[in-house]
Image (cartoon, rainbow, N blue to C red; front, side):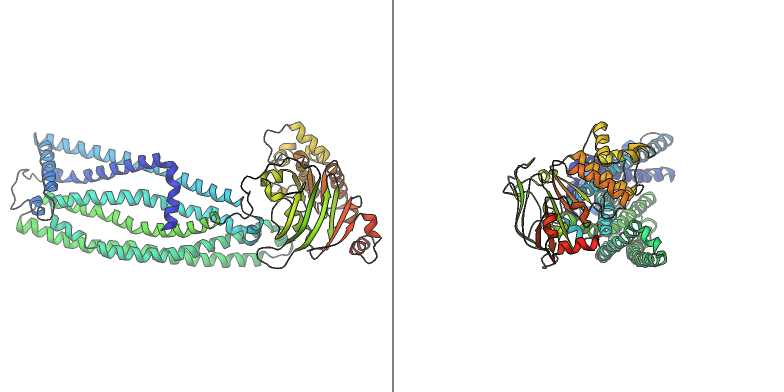
Length: 615
């Protein structure tokens, strides 16, 4: 229940709309009851029963033994006043008054029903929006290690599918849990005012219904959790296939992927059927028990009318209308607990994201930083990932002077990318410190620290927006002249103006409408426009053809000018002019120096890598 209460906490900003919805719900229930109760004087008039007809005992008098005296008096007064108003005048006038009252009752009932649905929809959609925004916003605060351990499809499913499941529970509480009980109270009151004996028969079914509701709800919660996990698996397979469609087609693996997807949907299909069977079991059982009681009521009530004469036929029919009006809200209530259990299971999955604490956060009173003056230092830095005790970096020590071009080389898996990921605090060192101007970077605000850096990676990340918006990513209202200037410096302007809409051309998801070299130059233009004092290139040219590499390398050299630059490179030709080169092997620094110094070391790893590339 704690999960569900947490879901409801998101309702607070919408309390005005909720209050209006509840008010309309109350009016709907009262007018709904009035529309049925008016059938009694209507039937009395049509059957030409005497309004003042005396029977052996009044239903209200009979109820006095079990009802408080004040309630009996109130019911008597209301009933007398109502009868005086209705049954004054000729038969035609009485019939007209009853018909107009029924008309207004139904009109008001439907108007308030519409308004209630409108206000509640605002609350529902607002809550879903806020939960979805909170989950998405929290994702940005989580460390990179979180995304390494979570499936992309699973995260997408939680923020889309699971949040949609939560939506149904909002209406379950603020519509069904308010309207249906009110409706039950109104019609139960009408029934009691007519005959308390007959009313007792109608509530016999309640304990049985509650037992069935509880059993079905608990079963559904367990199944709903499994169902949401299955949907996450389907989303994961779908995401992987779409993003890797080129490989699937190249290897002719569409049949394999079809079978894998069909296997997941088959499992989902069987789970849904199981849940539907359980959910649908509550309603017919509740209805059958209600009908059993209804049949007993009809028999017993018929005795009171035909044999004892203690109940008028019109009152008995009005009582039947009221009792059978209780069945729909009771059936609705039987499904409320099911929806609450399902939404709680979905809510658990959403709140797992929100309850994951960010491990990389600003310390109290963190300092601002907008530039640095002297150096970047790695001081005895070691690192391992959370899911492994094996060190990726071992006691790394080096210093980068401001304005230097600093290169990292070594075999794949040597720890180069991990090392540069520590600088913008995508991860924090397991041991040791990283300093800027002899100040630990943990003391700086994370956003300020990352603004010092521009990153260009081998896998270029672009968005399905225009070329202009991709270059100016994160910068609002930036002048077009500056964007074009950055594109020219990145050797991108010429191919951009040849696109169908120039700088306003949409480039597709991940820039699929562009070549690898074009995407890389767009990312360089983006970094140039940001104009950071520190540039990081993570194998930015390793996946390009020779012509594209020359254009990109030329753009990189422009970007390096008057900046501190860190370059990870497999192609050693791109770093021959670096001020300092660090050679890593299995997370350890084994060589350092410039190109000329390292090439002179016999049997050194740098010399070996260089000779392999320029054999």
